[in-house]
Length: 353
Image (cartoon, rainbow, N blue to C red; front, side, top):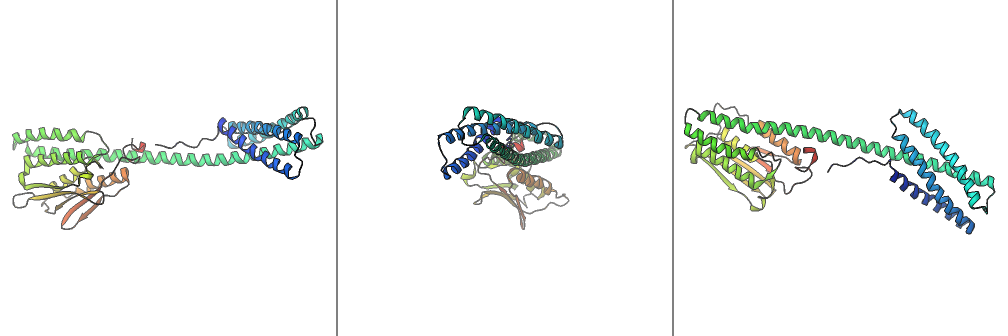
């Protein structure tokens, strides 16, 4: 699920900050009065009044500066508005609330002049706190927005690359299938017709438009493709040997990946009664499946199997951030990771939608 950018400039944020900071400030004052043994009934009422008025001042200052931040104006204009507005609100509200305090709490232990000065200093401190905390919130928000925008760019890039790879990999199978069909037409029309019928069944799987599929389904599809090749062209000279641990059948794999490897083996190796080709498909204890065959290279054939493998390799890197291992010794072996379950990095990832 794609994360939302941090959005702190709301009324709820203003209320939460106002209450939280007011509690801290008034707790400090309460401890100071208690330490000096000056805590009496009048001071208790004064602290309650200050707590409520501090919340009001904090809230109004936060709401004002949040609105300024969201203005579509130049930075120096917004800064000018913020400074002048915050000062005006603080001074006017400080004087007004002090007058209210004189009316509601006439028995204040402090002289009126000192009371006005003390409240004004306190409210200016509140202004500074609002400015600094808003600046911190703004910096956090900008950083989150930058990360969020980078995530979108990366996601779009991955999606574009994935679609490009998919659009190139699927025609790869179609191109080779049509080449095979072209070789049959005119030479053996009956086999060509049978090939078309079988090919239609195979294409039902390839046009499923799935990003990942169960290994069991991929094995069935690969087996159908191999049977198609055996019936039409190679007979028993082509053999597929399966060594599959049953626990892996419900694991996930990229569709058409095993078929691609079998197709490459058929395309680039001699298959005859003198040189039968055995292709082995087997799982490993390391949550992978590998396809291997003896190397019996055809003469005069361009060995471009690296193209399809390159697409498959990058497709696994994009979808799962896992590596496809290719080894070439006396046998050609390609090892593909098996995915235990769908995760946010696969089909459910909005980056790939």
